Amino acid sequence: MAVQAGVYRGVPAAARVAERRTRLMEATLAVWADPTTSTTMTRICAEAGLSERYFYESFRNLDEALTAVIDAIAVEIEERALSAADESGADPAGRVLASLRALVEMLVEDPRKGRVAIIEAGAMPSLRQRRTELLHHFAQRSAEEARTLSGGARRSEHDDEIAGVLFVGGMAELITRWLSGTLEATPEEIVEAAARSFLGFYR
Image (cartoon, rainbow, N blue to C red; front, top):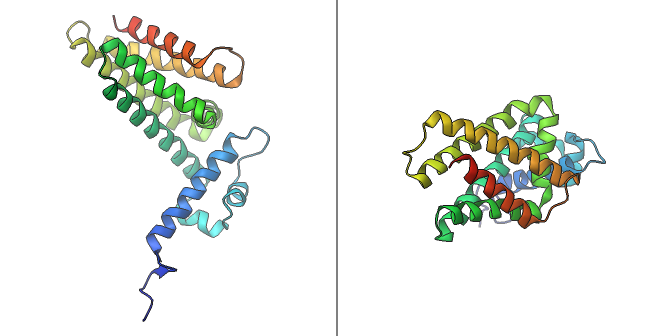
C-alpha cells in the first residue's frame, strides 16, 4: 500500500510542523528565561534539538519567536484568569480574588513565564512596543471587568481606563520585584495586595 502523500510514520506533515513549532516555543522560553546565557537562534535550536532549517519553518527571525512566546503567555494569563473568575461563582470581590490567584498560581508553577513576559521583554528594545501593547490590553480588560462588576454606572470609561493603567503598571512592577527576589512575599500576600489595589481603584 502506498504511503499517503505528506504522511511520515503515520504523522501528517501539518502535525509535524506544529510539533516542531511547539518544541521551538518551549526551547525559546527555556533559553530566554535563563539569565546565565544569551538568547540566540543557535541556542534555541540546540535546546529544541532541531536544525536552523526548522526554526525558519516556524519563524522569520528571533524577534518573531520571542514575540510568539510572550503572546502565548498573555493568552494563557487571560484564559486562566477569566476561567477562574467564572468558576468561582463568587461576588465581585471574590471574582477578583479568584482571577488574581489564578495568575499568581501560574507564575508559581512556572516563574519563567513571568520573567520573560514582564522583565526580559521590557529590557529588549525590539520587544518593548509589543510588551507595551499587551500591558495596554490588560489595562483595558481590567477596566471592562470593573465596569461589569460595578454595573458600569458610577464612573466614566476614561476614569476606568486611567485606573486600569495604574493597576496593571503597578502589578507589573510588583511581579518584577517578587520574581527577581527583591521583594519577599508569599503568593497569597501578592494576591491579597493586588485584590485590595484593584478594588480600591474602582470604588
